[in-house]
Image (cartoon, rainbow, N blue to C red):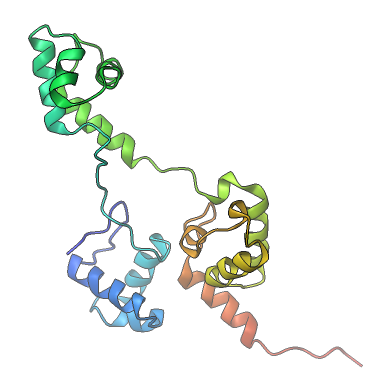
Length: 205
């Protein structure tokens, strides 16, 4: 089972989260998704809204980044009076990588492997700038289509047809859900569905 990273769980257990996401993949309605796991429907809907309708993968550390054991090896090398080159050679790392790691975490006199590893983990958790925030022209198009009650899936497909050779003007529907104005699938559907089913008033004679 996987507990969603950086998303409030609203008291929903890991097993219930798995069931919610399974039903989400099957395309079930939000009312059915909310009722099935045995959790209050509003909690299930808030959980989905908080995630942007996209299941977050657990945070993993790239092999390019230093591990906790590598930092421990560096700390032992510092205590033994070694230069950055010696632990770098043992670890198969570039000496400049070791030097930057030491400088970033207080220098040779204050470097501690555990605190350096914890700091690196926290830096990795910081929210990254949304993809749409970096492309104003694309963002304007996406927001215009959302205002017309287009779904993120429809927008992503339309962009692929309109700009087939321009990667800067294309975006996945997941990225739209997690954009600067994160689109909650539950809240998006309600007003749009209402606008589609509302009776059209006739003009007075």
